[in-house]
Length: 446
Image 1 (tube, rainbow, N blue to C red):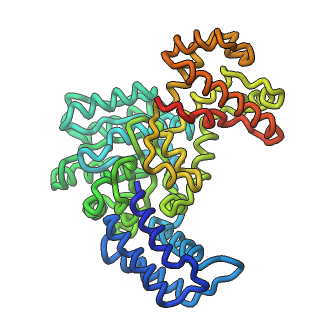
Image 2: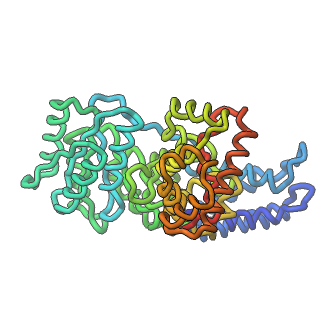
Image 3: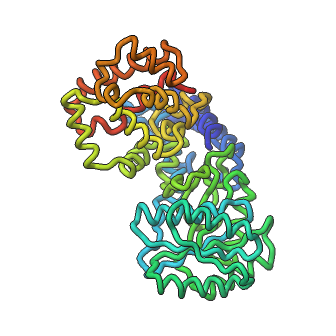
């Protein structure tokens, strides 16, 4: 998401390249290009104009100081305004009530049920909560089945009453059940429609009145652009929801919904979601998203993802091995498994400043590790623990077992040894072994 917008904004800033100062003329040209970029990203014209007017007002009369170029100053102004447009700061999420009741609403196909599973998994694994999923979609048996499948995958109980056709009654009974079972988070997945209609609105409003939820989250498909914003407004008029969830951020979307939904309904984006994997749920940070849009990366989120997956004690043990130059293939394989848990590889690399643009046209599959894993899995336990023991004869056997050419095994072994030497040089740095697997991906794309 945002790739096209990022490119258009970068092009707009080039108007100021080489300029000694900001002037009315170069501001006007840059602001015009920024407005066009926002409109192309499916941002409402009124919002785009108001945004660029603020940028122009802040930029006019600004002096370039301390070797900061006009282009850099304009980027900073646009970053600040994008952050403010998307909410300014992280929105809180209520989890202290016992039980905390969360009502999930949205159109059919927006990803409500999948998000419900992701939220339950997030609250269980990241917040230490005891969630209960509630199947309150009385119109689609498949939605009930889907929620049960998701609950089984993440080890969270699902409450449903297949014969009960009263969604309000199901929600009320679920709360009683949750209290009996000492569940402290109740996530109610409600029915959706292909379009906003009175029946759906009345039903979800009735559930709200009956259970008085602590959080009402409106789930919106970010690929629907301004239509998503308009739908959010209709829901908010009836439900007065507490926050928005943007799904399908990995799709080919222009980003208009993410940029303007806060402005339109005055409710914060609380979570973003991409893909079907149940660990792909992120808290929404407006400042970090603004940085990513402007090609600055998002190191803070990358570090948080790493911290969530890497065990501190295991990392300390690994660091000791690296300091002693004892890092082996088994350690390497374990690190690869940890990296895979962090999410989509291309998204992760895009969080590194300057990398996102460089890899935008590169096909980086989540299967990129398979070639490396096949080679290591073809080694004996002794070979994994003793990389220096792998001679030509062993390499030939490993290549056959992995279904690879000998040249591929040789290339990997060379890269691995280079990585070990680099670790040896850098072993004075703490946590040097956190993500060693990234360096060996070169050439291993299949």
